[in-house]
Amino acid sequence: MHSERKPPPIQVSFFTTVGSSQTSGKLLHNLEHEVAQLTKLRSAPHERLNQIGPGKRDLPVSVVKMLAGREGNYSGRGRFSSADRCHVLSRYLPVKGPGLVDHMPSRAYVSQFSADGSLFIAAFQDSQIRIYNVDKGWKIQKNIHAKTMRWTVTDTSLSPDQHHLVYASMSPIVHMVNVGSSQIESLANVTEIHEGLDFSSGDDGGYSFGIFSIKFSTDGHELVAGSSDDSIYVYDLEANKPSLRILAHTSDVNTVCFADESGHLIYSGSDDTLCKVWDRRCFKATGRPAGVLTGHLEGITFIDSKGDGRYFISNGKDQAIKLWDIRRMTSKATCIPGQRSSEWDYRWMDYPPQAKDIKHPSDQSIATYRGHSVLRTLIRCYFSPAYSTGQKYIYTGSHDSGVYIYDLVSGARVATLKYHKAPVRDCSWHPYYPMLVSSSWDGAVVRWEFPGKGEAPAPAPAPAPASFSRNRIWRRHFS
Image 1 (tube, rainbow, N blue to C red):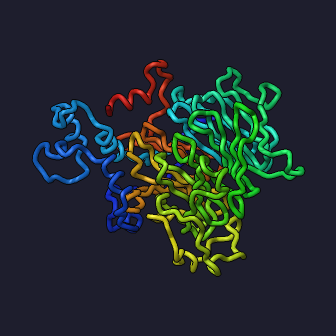
Image 2: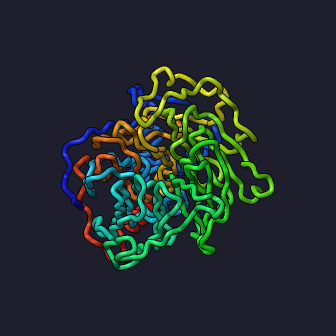
């Protein structure tokens, strides 16, 4: 049932001082890698803005000083740079609330904002996928009743032009829906056509597999998918057929994504514990990955690219997120005999306490983030938005029903959001506004914001004129 009712009181742990003496804010590592310097540059104010008025020259610079410097044109630009903007906005973490967006009698598996933040997609185990119009008070724009479901909706992806949505389940058939049509209730092949895209090939001999992960390419011409038959598939939408199958791993491929806008590089993560990098320009000649990255001790549940073709993060069943630089990859994996337990299964068992102290002897990651829990389902993790934070945070759902936000450079946990009563499989940070939406197996979809003074979040705004949306107001104010 769609609702904006106020939920009962919640618990939020929020530590404004990264690396403080508090347990949840302790420094986990001192990242001296190049990515740390890039992150600081993208979220640090102009040096002259730190020299305004009396007082210490410490970071972060107060908002008052930043605004005074902008009005006085201290930087010589007459406006905030992208780094200035991130320095201001990244301090406003979306930790207040939550406000209830919706509550369904089914587990939520997917929740994602569109690239411009105007739409929000939530997918549930009972075959429903809801698309909310964020700019129109979270009104349901499309209620999709999925076709040919096996177990659950495992993943969805919105096309770059936001005209089409694809959804996957434990089947080789992915379905595509027209999001822009006027029909709100989209019942598969009854009120609307849900076009089936068959990822299987003619030589499969009738073998059926499931798809765990699916993503549109930046140009919208292709889909990349990770499957239960240990493979990566690339589907050519113009030719309407698979253009590439890679037998990529020795176990389920739980997650795939394009590394950057070019579409040449693909990242994959598997239950075989490995992250792999695939270069499509040379794969047909070599038949091998461009490189392999080892470090996780258990299977990988999700990968998110920083979008630069160099860095990505992965969530693992060893209860850790890892940050990777693909320049560290090697041509083959380093084995870790005797360190994985074949008897342990994350779907119904807790992680062995003694295993938490084990480290991979050939860990190629550049940082590790711990505190959350990865059990029962393929829990996802992400970089925070580039526009508002300079990607200085990492955030993730958790089996313990929370959302965890880590500082990328220090490794400190800067916020923990607690409201749900069941695992949080997915969550999504608005690309421009300090708002985060979490969805859980308890069926609840809730939004967290930063209203300014600690009061409860304001109700969803009335529809704004098309040329003057909330997103544009926020972006213009901090330009």
